[in-house]
Image 1: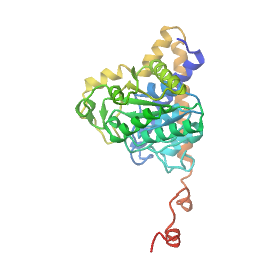
Image 2 (image 1 turned 180 degrees about the vertical axis):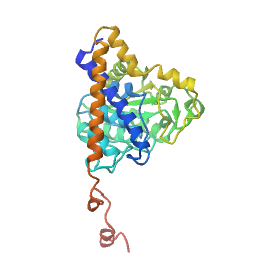
Image 3 (image 1 turned 60 degrees about the vertical axis):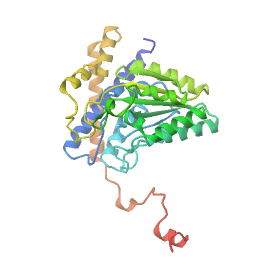
Image 4 (image 1 turned 90 degrees about the horizontal axis):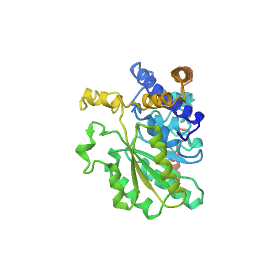
Length: 332
């Protein structure tokens, strides 16, 4: 392995944090501590961690409705994340974004969105900004296999190709768009093939292998930084939970779920580190224990944090008030 021991520890710890965070979120949803919808990322940790490890702190990402892992991998902090999901004033968006709309602009996370594929044009816009400002930044754009069937996906790829924008499109192909299998709604089985229509190069990697993802994304990022334009990377992966908490996963077999759980990115990576005598099993257990304590601490912080003050309800709203509309002549 080319990475340092410190880097390898970081990848493993971050994947464990994401997994344990998601399991804690599932528990808090069941207890109604977290309200509303939440779309968990467990199983896909290697994609977020591998991809974000291949970019710099001042690079950007755009995320999806299944975005907790992306936020944490891009430098998000567990307490602020958990507080946001609990709707508390100490969350990243003061509790107003919730699970699906977390943004952490200071860390380069331009935000998650609950509308499938709507972050893809945002990524292209950010990449256009990078090019116009003549910086060396790149943009990672995460989206699912279902989003690649959306019209705006194709418009965005076309514009990014025409303008040679520094954006890497990262398709997390977890085989299902909600409950519909990708094989039933896409004319091609490899989403990477869709890049051919726009003369964009593409690569496919094992999305359950953090080092494979990192290596693949690094190549795409280097290409973007050189000014050679966008790349589409498809990561083959799998979500452990249903689309959301209301999904009983009746469309998947237990055998299929077992097969993918056997490819668990955390177990695979831990075994590789032990087999290569980089870590002992005891050291890995200690890393997991620390991650558990950090998630427990984040839960405590979130639960004990205050809700937003109702007097601040209209803060950060950029639409004009009805009075301003009338005075400005918009309403007559």
